[in-house]
Length: 316
Image (cartoon, rainbow, N blue to C red; front, side):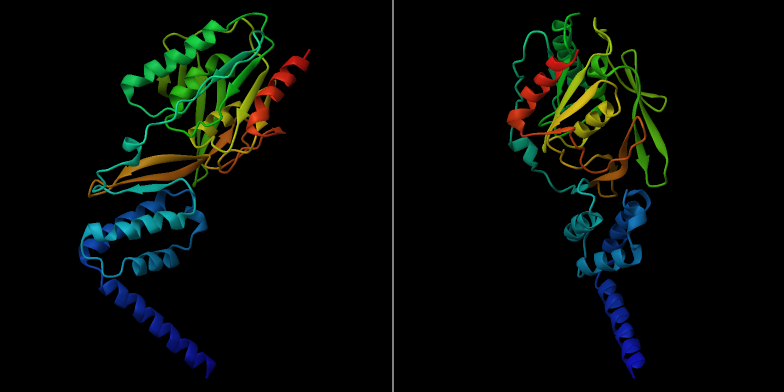
């Protein structure tokens, strides 16, 4: 009797699913299928999701959708169901963007003793015209402090919530040093290499960005204190990871935001866009991340700078 009831329940459930799909227009269904196919192929969570159950849930959420625009809430829901905390959906019809309404914060430099170098690596959101200014500004600040007698450097990544990682990476090369500094690792276990070398930063063999005014430190291979906090995110976390495994380096502050994943932008058939997390960050020693980066010395924001100074002062 129980088997009969269970069988009847499954028939009803399947009927409900089919009925739900029947209430979605062919146009809406085609668009939803386009998105689900993309997520199933490329998401970093690809191998952790039951895609049959996932698809049924998305169709249920899209019930009665007729036009593509009707599916937008369902697409946002699908992205949230990936639970990677980094991907997002930007509808083509979304003409008003919050970032255009709210000015980006200006991050001030800290004051440190004259025998310690300090450089803040801020977020970078800009176009090709502003990349050079970003790189030149950081390079000039490093150049102005480039002295043989420095005890070390403080690299401040607090509040760096991300953007384009490549200008950041090539800017900090004089302090970071050359070589392989990290990787992307995708859901098929393929590695892509981050490498910096003589004013250029590479993804595998492709030049992603370059610094035409590269300088070399008078004190090569310095001690480096890296400051991080809960607002260090995304590409800010990528730069943190580039310093992980580097000799003579210590991290101070709180754990980072926790989206150390690589995103790629995909344009859909209606010109909407999905920014999809499809890899995790891996450091030079092939330690895998994908979540928060932990400091070596845990302390509050208002303590991390002084603790970094104290550490550099104690080193022989």
